[in-house]
Length: 130
Image (cartoon, rainbow, N blue to C red):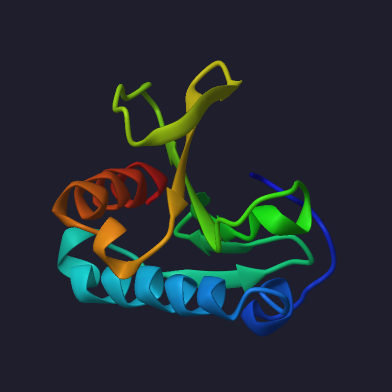
């Protein structure tokens, strides 16, 4: 979910979802363990009023709290921007946001959701954004 807004903090984005903040931190740790060898260039984190974005040259992954917008018990969602549409039953939805970019939305309920397959998708997205 690509949102715009004023600068914020991850704590503010997940102010009503402490579990969501924990899951954001888990995504952050996963990306940090991939290190610069996996994707050249620095990793930037930017929180807005609606989400926390991970950026290289451009944004490639976004963590947000669905309950802020709709009735949901999901503590966090991870949106991954890729040049191609991936097919997986794990995605809640996949949306073409521009002619060359697909946004893949994944519900996160626990750290176990952040497995090797998700790590690979994030690595690919970061490489494409670098």
